[in-house]
View 1 (cartoon, one colour):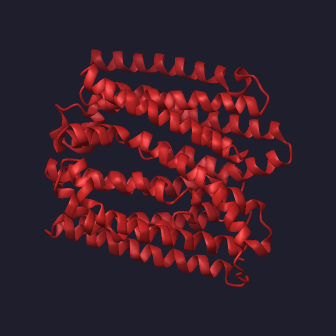
View 2 (cartoon, helix red, strand yellow; view 1 turned 30 degrees about the vertical axis):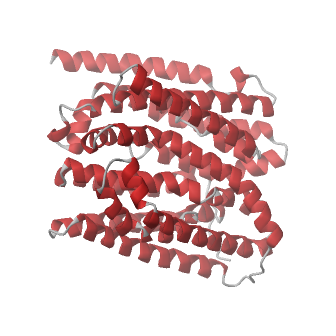
Amino acid sequence: MQLSPPYSLPAKAFIISFGKIINRLAALFAIIYLSYHLPKEDYGSYRQVWLLFNTLVPILSLGIPISVNYFFPLLKEKERKSFIFQTYFSLLILGLFFAVLFFLGSSIFSILFNNNQIKELMRYFCIIPFLALPTLFYQNLFVCLNNPVLATKISLVSSVFYFMSIIVPLELGYSIAVMIYSLTIFYLFQFLIISFLYYRIFKQEIFIFNKNLLVKQFQYAIPVGISSAIGIIVINIDSIFISAYFDTKSFAEYANGAMELPFIGIITGSIMAVLMPEFVKRYNEDKVEDVIRLWHSSINKVATFFLPLMCFLFIFSQELIIIFFSNAYKNGISSDIFRIYLLQLPCRITIFGIILLSINQTKFVLKSTALCLLLNILLNYILIKEYNLGIMGPAVATVISLYFVSILQLKQISIKFNMKLSKIFPWVYLIKLICISIITTVIIYLIDFEQ
């Protein structure tokens, strides 16, 4: 197995975050480019196809990628090749099923979204899920192998070619269909390169099919996968309701406002991905205080960046929407949707579910996210139909649901760690920080308003 120089936890988190941020920026710039160059109807249809893809990925990958973070640090050297190759081929089979579902289900989804255009686009797109699923865990693996630089190099190269595969066909005057073919070629090359890297890393090891390990992995992964699937549905259920109740132009407005800034989920996700193997090891060594210390340190660092940013962007959201998506969205509701979504950030400074997964509380994560989904669906319907909030209703429902599941999971962490709720989370620091952020932002706003 390939050896790598040791990296500290902050160094690994920074390296992985950097690669993921570049990757997300490429996706964001592609969306910005498309919003400037496509009519709202075409742009909305393309975003709906990606909505379906991003919603189905955690459902059909069954939590297998995240299981790498849990099992790999605990496995013996001789078991690791079997584990990784079994993971790879499991995702390959699931990817094939995903592709078939995308192709055969296109008619159903076009009816659900009241949009005939996505039927054709989904059929062009259907090979991409097959190519994408087996590559999902490469960052998890390289973090566990203490080689975050390799993961980041792949992310950087992928980002460039992903962006080029979108803009080049359109700049040459080709249709969206040709652009999707171009994307498919990109995903094919990514699939081949990452598959080769998996082989090269473990080529000296002997592969022996390990049925017991596969069963254990799926016993852990399936509840995680269902939880992740429910979680992503919770995140996307608002867009699904918008697609079902409103037209494609309204969805385009909503999708722009509901965008996540490229570094928000990445920073938290990267830090927690790096820390999860440490949480697993230290918790199994009965070093609970170390787990809490590491967790609090990550929360405070992320919050110091996120919470002031939330307050600042809340004031200047309309300007940001215009810069990103053109004047076509100046008088729409995108900026109001964006403000509502910014209120999520206090819950995004950590991932409560990762702590619970690190202590093998998969069933509770599943139950809590299921409750969150039910609440979100109920609130979506009530706020649209009963309170007539229009396309703002689903955004409000999503934020309320996120706070609900965060509090529920935080309470469970306090129970399992046998600590008071007041001690399990750095409340004092966060309250001080948000108060300072609000005061500072108000002063900036008043100065700007006077000018």
